[in-house]
Length: 126
Image (tube, rainbow, N blue to C red; front, side):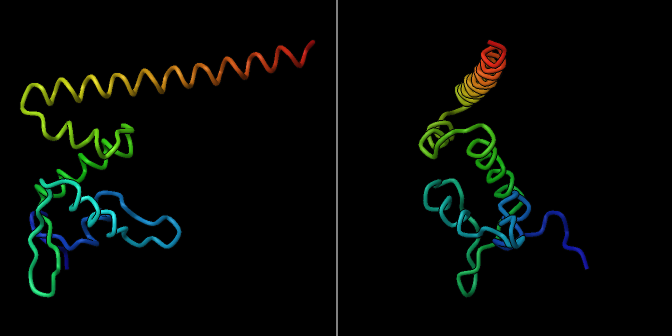
């Protein structure tokens, strides 16, 4: 039986949907979501009987944004907090600027690595 797409998800289901999975044993890294709850006031899952957390689709979309900013864009917790506290156009502007900086940094890092490789090849001919 499949859950409705808009149904609330348990913490394990949410973690797996976001991509927070231990690659060794394929279990959900639920501790990460609990940590994020403490650090990002915007995350407010429903907490029902037995302190079980349930996440709405809106919560999961927000968690995916945090995941992307931390894991893919390279922001720190502090940086993500600053971004999330911005409003409207400032948020879009800040995200775009941060992503551009990170992309430029990664590009320069890759180029530096390529240059080092070329230099080492040239040295091997001498």
